[in-house]
Length: 262
Image (cartoon, rainbow, N blue to C red; front, side, top):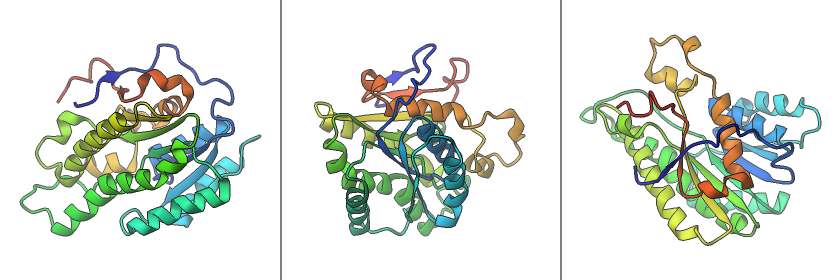
């Protein structure tokens, strides 16, 4: 790992309205961790921008948040990370500024993994599209949003990683390469913003019951795997001012017994 490792503070629980008056953008908001993070942020007082490929996939999450008592109205932000051009990312950031005037956090929860494939038979198209969604898109979106984030007194970007030992193993292909690169991106961005108001964080969740995991571990009993709720609470922590001491670090949610396994 290129980033120093930290843990969630013992006994930490989110303060009431810990993200009040904050605007948080979440990619992959229709998926497991994205959805759970969106709900957690909304309950903490944030205005949540729900980003994913199709508006229809976001509508159930929108309805869940809108049904919560005393929460800010979420916003649908359809965005095709695979097909968007650099100019479209810039236009997206400008749209956020016009509509809301600010942005306080970005959570890169979107991920693309079509399963385990040896590099020798991985199609060029799959290699390119996976690297784009899992690595290039987080860079382009963060770069486009940086002026908004740097204008705030405190802001955060959260990159979601995967087990680094497993990512370097056979058959993890473009997804494994992208996740390794994402940690490098987080490290470099932290070095460049360490003396600014923008905090850079990386998150390494424990195994979660998500569609991506089902793709890879098709024979696994999903009832034995935890939901993404614990990871969403960690996202909430990283977005809040309480995580200032964890900037530039990787928040590892795996327990000590499983955290060192390859």
